[in-house]
Image (cartoon, rainbow, N blue to C red; front, top):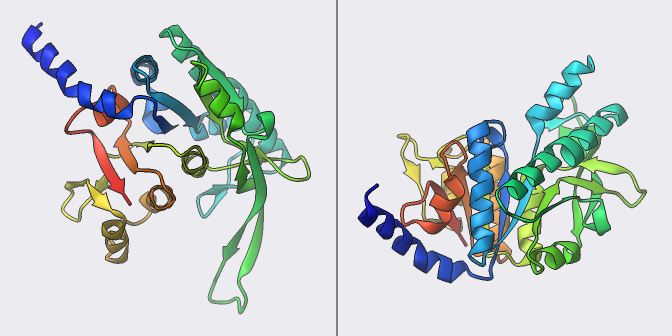
Length: 292
């Protein structure tokens, strides 16, 4: 071990720790980082270290692959329209079982094994996430009017009451949140985890929003990583087609956050070991930083 290099790394992290001390960081956890055993342990260690140095991490997680696996075991095939899972009542039961049970409790356990004090929640706990039903509008050439498609128990965030999250993070706990919300009628709704993380970051007045992905970040037309982008830069990249496809929803989520008071949003490569620490506490980072 080169002691000089270790000291340099620690000194490099110091100003970031000082700047983020006492601040809330909302982290959307998904992709390879959730399925690779070594990366799962790295993520848990990162979250515990952040809490230990006085930063307040809040974790929002997905679980698409795990939901698909259980549906297949039950002989039920997942169906999607415009990237949204068609969620009938039976599928919603599976979603709640996987997100609120299996996945949420595994993340809580991983963090606690590393010395943290994680608490698992769904959006149904303490009225955390209020949801409204989402409808998909599809336009085709042979239809004069847009077709409105009912995709079942899929929702969008109508309101967030962050009091339970604030209570936990101010009392040395690490909230771990499954993106299941409840409607006015008491029905449960599956909500995109990126959207929940973005809205939660806004309501909590978070310093940063981190979205873990399976890509290096936002790439230019020649494949180079783009970072230090303003909201205006991002809009220009969308307009000229540089940002497209599956990256668009994440980018829109990041833009909404920074335009609503979150200081920065970062789209980072969750396939990199200790990606969260590298992005938050080092000079170079491992993803795309977006500011308002």
